[in-house]
Image 1 (cartoon, rainbow, N blue to C red):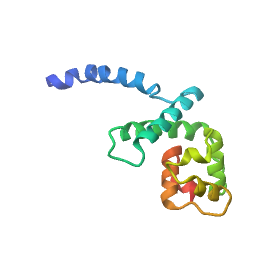
Image 2: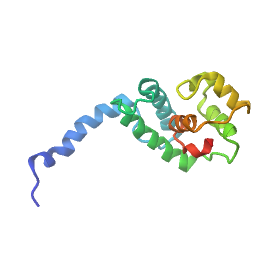
Image 3: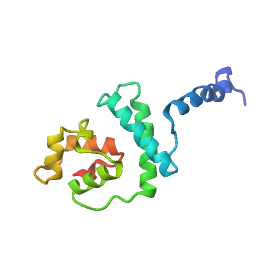
Length: 141
């Protein structure tokens, strides 16, 4: 089997890029509660930077970490079958978030109305909450 010059050196090039990436991000796999908390903190910082801009250069990093968190949650955290607003309340409590912390998903007043049962969660907000918490959007609908 012959290798081109580029493919022979790819693992070393990946390693040279991976180690600084891993150090900068702080967590690249989520296996423990501590990893989970670090990943959530990094996701929050990335969400502040990336927002809704899927073309942002850091959007792939956000997706990567969200996938790791989702895998951890699927194996370790049971989201209760409940009304969408109760699922939101549960996730906010688990992540230590206030209504104002979800400004990237919806204005604080709308979050308050949702939690108070005065408003349903729209599909648009459900998608943003799903991205924020690394869960399926249908838990909010």
